[in-house]
Image (cartoon, rainbow, N blue to C red; front, side, top):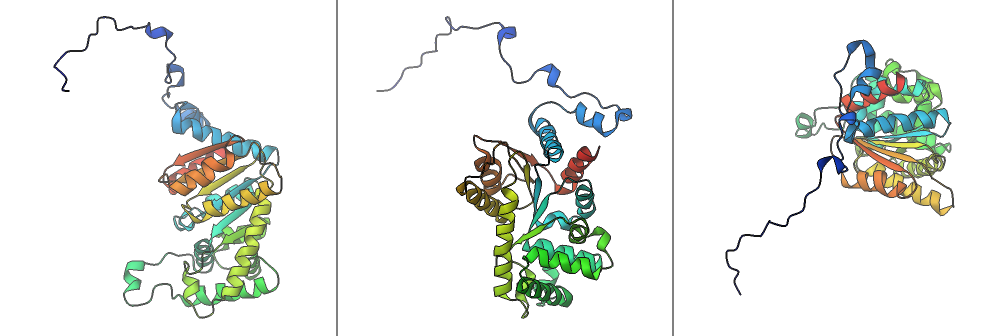
Length: 312
């Protein structure tokens, strides 16, 4: 059966008064022009009370509340956060008491060690790959692998071994090294490695036994840190896959032991919304028990802004 051309009858369509409707956008939530005399606090107050700006305020409030109640603020960082020069910002947050523990991927320690030793990092992969020079900086492969093997052999975690070493040798650029600051401020660092993903794995001195054992030990340290986050905050900054997976497994272990994570706040910060971070950090771990937020933007802009809001 085919339908004929008949205009729909609108004569009985019902309407209602606009003032009676519940609306999601109201003028009292609008942004205001910023008065420079009001400083950073005034700038944040001038933002609209909706969407990303409201989430940003909520994250700031959650971190402040966790610190005030000694509930813990654990940060998971991808290496890009260090590569874009945010070490000094993280060090200031550590000194202010806004960092209870740090989790890194394997590349994180590599870049921070190079910064500490040489004051620079991040080679030109396109230029180095063709002639076979990519990842072959002698000191990076030799020293980091040796430190991991020796430290893990003494019963340390992978991150613990590197932090202890840097604290002992006092490298020339320690003032901008997050790991050197961790040694000075006694902030625990765990490192979570996927074998074959980091340049130090390409060197003949790499020990799979030490790297694997140290990273597994760090996972158990990290799980212990997560177990203390009821009422606290976990932030995943710049890790799209590895650390979200590690965090989810840690949450599963904590709950398996019957330990409450009620009122935990989780935050994912990245320049894109990625499946695993959104699922394994923002949604699943806090479903029905806490709150999760996504703050989307470039690390080199968003992290300094968050740090400034906390310090103000």
